[in-house]
Structure formats: structure tokens, C-alpha cells
Length: 332
Image (cartoon, rainbow, N blue to C red; front, top):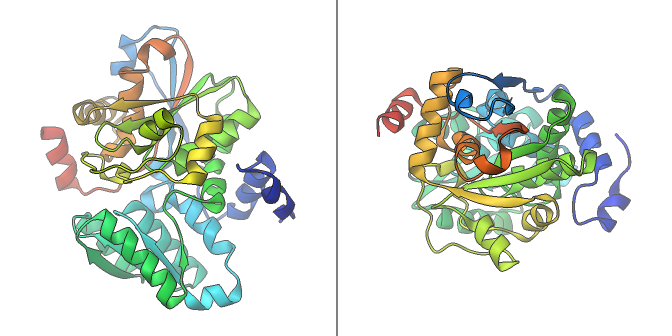
């Protein structure tokens, strides 16, 4: 592993060397997820010159990109911190990633999840050995996780903020730029912004001309409000079918990285997200969670005029939902 702490002191974003170092550290512990070209169905309605590639992070271990940041965080714990364990708050995907990473690292994990989280996700966390605490909503979950960190000395593994998380997500962008030559744009689903921050940092440091757009559900648009205000914003309410993107606020680090590297933010409706899920299932035979369809909804909606005729990558971020919920969402 290369020695990079001096870079961290001088940069408010992950420099490319740090992302490359993280990729080497994670090699063998995460999958290099494939890219597929989408050429049928919905894509046939676009300008014929448009080339659309899917970055299949839904095939990652634990079913989500979150594992990259969680493993990177676990790898940086010292011996005392490992003994005290970790804590995280999440509606499911991050919790699953932390539970799996903690099991691999032999570190105790306590997870605080909203009571409405998918039972399948809760069960997976418990099967990997984590303690799970259920609270009424995501706000209460975050507050209790912070209490546990203070009272028990556990290390908080944040779902979307901080250098270690963004270094981890940056490895998605690193892979993508190697896998698809000549990309002109990348569209990334945004909840708290950790995935978008990391991918954008990697993409822009490799090719500054490649555009990076973040896409949010209209009912969970903290990053879009933050871009408009010029500083991190807090939402009074989160209401979206894409529960994995339901971050109630943006935070300084991920917002700062997104502000530096992301070319723009767009919103998509729950109806457009469901339509995109149907298209991904019909055309590409992919059973995705709503969050994963947000990049497709953005390409076919608010970004269509900007991206037709371009070589575009859509990041598909996860697929952690059960068959009954998937069918329910598509039937709505």
C-alpha cells in the first residue's frame, strides 16, 4: 500500500492516486463489476448515435456499491478501534455492506435501521452477525447511531460522507473509465452523494471533458437543493419509492466533492423511476431496486436533450429487494 496521508492534508477531495491505492487495497475483496451495452427497447427510441452502457454495480457482493466504502473504512481501523467495533445507520444497503465487511474483518457491528426497512435486508444483516436496532425513521436511526458511537466508543461508518467512503466509491469510476473508452457522460443516482462524489472525482481526474450528472428522486433531493443554495441542505421530509436514496440531508465532504466535479443535478419523479424499472426488466432482464433505475429515468427524462448522440454510462447501484416488493412496484 502506498503512503498517501500527506495528500489528504492538502486536498478536500480524493486525488486520483488515493483512489488507485484504494482499488489495490480492495482487490480480491470486491468484484470488478461488468459493463453491458443497452441497445434494445427504450434505447431504440433515442438518436441512433447515442451509445448507452450500464455499469452493473448491482452485481457487487452484497448487491450494492456500498461494500467498497465499508471495506475501505474497515481496513483503516487500528487495533483499539477494531476491538470497540463499528456502528452505522442505514435503510438497508449500507447496513448490509457494513455487516458483511465487519464479518470479513472480524469486527463487531451494531446497525441502526428504520423500522420500515426491508425485512430481507434486516435479515441479511443479522445473518452476517451484526446486531440490529430498529427505530421509527431514518432521522431517529442517525441520532441513535451517533449516540452509540459516543457511548460505546464505536467507529461510525457513515453511509455517504467522508474521505474513506468516497475513496471507495471512486473505484467504481476508475473501473468504468478503463472498461468503456471514450465516455462522454456518466449519470449517477444520488442519495447522500457519496457514490456520485467518488465516481465524479475519478472520472474528472482521468478525463475532465467527460460530463458527470447526478440524479435524485424528486422527494429526496437534498443534493439538488444544496447545489441551488451553495451549501449542504436539510430536508424537512423524505418521500420517495427509492428508499435507498432517502438521505435526509447533504454533508460537507460529499457536497464539497460533488460541487467540485459534478456538472449538474436533475430530479426524477417516482412514476419515472417505476417506468425505468420496467424498461430495465423488459429490455435488459434486470430486476433492480428503484434507486438503481434513477439514472435511466434521468437519461430518458431531464437529461435526454443533453445526452442524445453521446456515449453515456448509467450507474446501476443496487438490487436489494425481494420478489414480492419488485412485483408490487412494477404493478403500481
